[in-house]
Image (cartoon, rainbow, N blue to C red; front, side):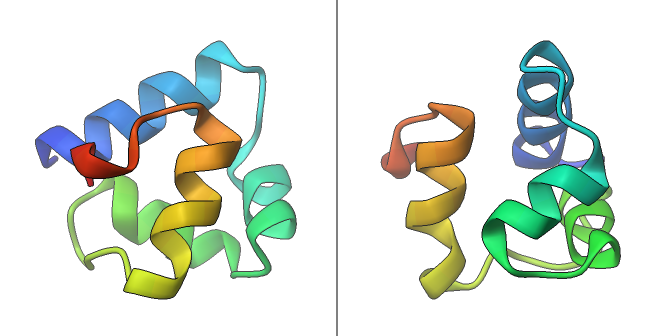
Length: 62
């Protein structure tokens, strides 16, 4: 798991969000969230800002 992926997973869980709920909010699939958390894919530019907002993580950490 990547550092970013771990940060996403921990923050998501701390906020009480499932992968599915976060995916709905970001208009991506649950599998996309899983791939980010497991370091299997990188976060696309267009998803970075909404993800940052949802998880309250500074954008520059992505």
